[in-house]
Image 1 (cartoon, rainbow, N blue to C red):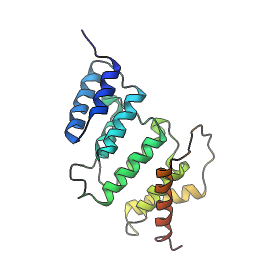
Image 2 (cartoon, rainbow, N blue to C red):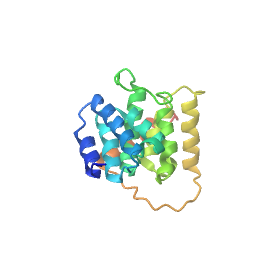
Image 3 (cartoon, one colour):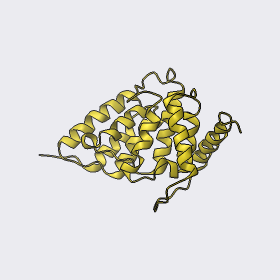
Image 4 (tube, rainbow, N blue to C red):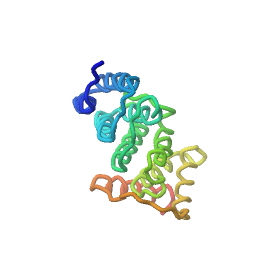
Length: 194
């Protein structure tokens, strides 16, 4: 039986141009996994990046949640930040992203992704400044008794009194990620009364 080379899946991911291509890619990934093939880290990175770039963070989150089925990993904090940013943007303007369907709900999906960070050997979200700033500012934009706001305030409390842990991650940010963090921190000042 002929099995295509690992680079074939990577090339297919890189060639995706729209939502339909991404949907076809997911079908291919399922077949790839059923043939007992692995999705390597470079291919995982490309798949998640394409989902973000093409405005389908919901598909990326679905792939990450069901790792046994798809075998796709969240391989870098940079990709995690970009996915979190896109999920937050979709949650803020769900009508703008008509093709996106929430995994749980638009307001819960960013928190769902944040809970997956340790599963993929990334730092807890409260230890990662850019992600925590984006997530906290998103959550505090909701009414006072809402679940997202309560989660954001719990995140802020954890950031205030962090549990010491040993981290072996590069938490440096790109210019764009730094801008997301600064925007998040500035947005936090308003609802918290600073």
